[in-house]
Image (tube, rainbow, N blue to C red):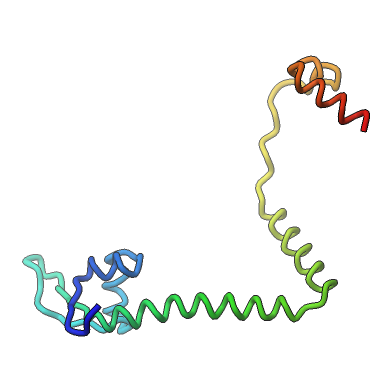
Length: 133
């Protein structure tokens, strides 16, 4: 990107992987510098955004994500084995508490014998082999 290149709102939205409305909101709120070049026939502002501004925005977003991940890795690496294990167990418990219950099967429950009877011959062989081990 060269410094004298100007992008439309739509082009910037595509580059930043956000919607046109997000780009316009960032311009309105002063988070993204833009040049007002006029209005549409319906009165909507028409903007152009300089390439160097887009480059800055891209480097900020990727830099912030990378640095947060680096900080997390550094913190995790500084933990002892017991602390890591405890943290992982808590994370798994947290995820399980937020996982919805699977739907209960409708109809009668099959006994072990009925279920075994419905297995294919290959599955029966594997089940028998697992029982012997």
